[in-house]
Amino acid sequence: MYQKNFWNDRYSQAEFTYGKLPNEYLKEKLDTLKSGKILFPAEGEGRNAVYAAVKGWQSEAFDQSEEGEKKALLWASENNTEIFYTLSNVENIEYPYSSFDALAMIYAHFPGESRRAFHRKLSGFLKPGGYLILEGFSKLQQEYQQRNPQSGGPRDYEMLYDLEELKKDFENFEIKEAIVKTIVLNEGDHHKGEASVVRIFAVKK
Image 1 (cartoon, one colour):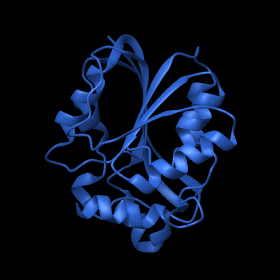
Image 2 (cartoon, rainbow, N blue to C red):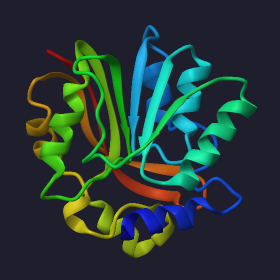
Image 3 (cartoon, one colour):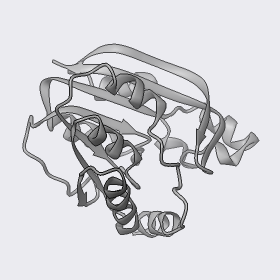
């Protein structure tokens, strides 16, 4: 409940917390793929789901925040497109098995003790041959947070990503790219400045 209240409070502000433009890594990868059906877990205000919809994808998203849903649906409407948004946390979300062509996990951080189970649950919704696009904060992000709190990411170290652990979470995938990289974020007021991220692009076997 704390997390839900936290995100509702953050998303209730007039401005978009992470901006309205899509994540750069997501955009880079989506622009190379044939459109299909895509899932966005923990999608918040919808910037990435709306971008995918504009590009011709059937875009589905879920998040536990009602305030995030309101802004996501409004942003879709302003872009003359449609997204399908479900209010749910990851524990309770359900979709048909093997029903998506792509799974986009953009800063979708889950508690350390539950992470692997959640990742495997979400990957079950993806078809064989479907794509995983993932960007999130690495364990090294703690150092960047100390220098610049606006760079973003969970303050709980266990929620930050370790690349080798992620590879095990998605072991039934053919990894096309898996890197830890320092980038300069410019996504609203809460992803701003130098940050350490993990990026994975993979195909489900």
